[in-house]
View 1 (cartoon, rainbow, N blue to C red):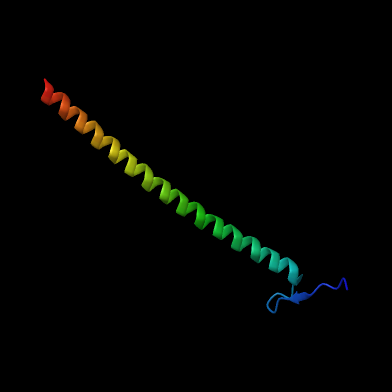
View 2: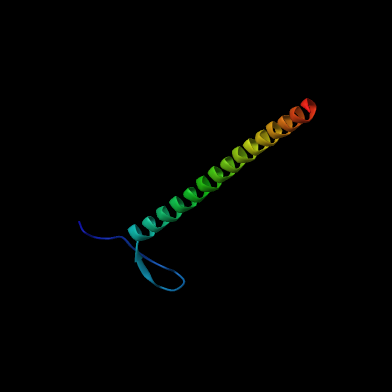
Length: 71
């Protein structure tokens, strides 16, 4: 039962085993999914970073205002 299913390309006639093609497809799909997750994570992180920057700016401006008013 060690027979490997061979597929022949109708265009070039090259033969390859179906398992290798399937494994290549799975690896490609996995890589695409990892890239999507990476981009989503970077987008979320960037959004959080921008939010914190705005919060810091607001706090800084409020502190400067209080200092000006106390002088």
